[in-house]
Length: 141
Image (cartoon, rainbow, N blue to C red; front, side, top):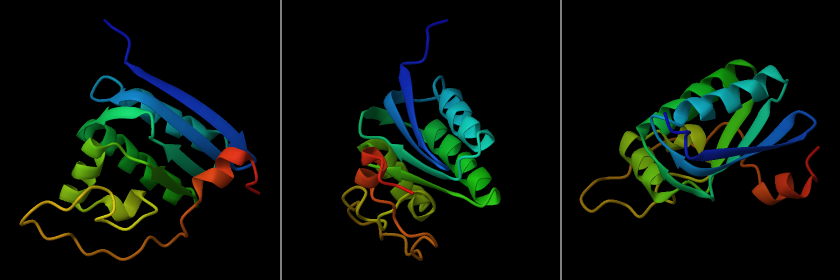
């Protein structure tokens, strides 16, 4: 059985983590995503930022892993936010109307709107957006 074509990097800063995923997120690699996010919670991390810049593909298996992790993080009193989703995930978020649960930007800013499909209306997330640059530079407290 081939190994999933996904790499996970994690950088912790107190109770906050930046997780960078690189590669493809699909049925084979989604369990790796779920495990990485669960481990962060188990380690006491309560603010999780997921950088998807190097992700080339993400299907509904990845969305499911992110939604599951977001629910568990919220139940633990924390937040999980996705940053820079690939176009495939942006499209899935727009179609399902679930972007407001995972993104720090409003829906419609993820991917160009689909012709003839009205954008879902959603309230802004209850938590303020987290600037990714702050997490990367280590200035987060």
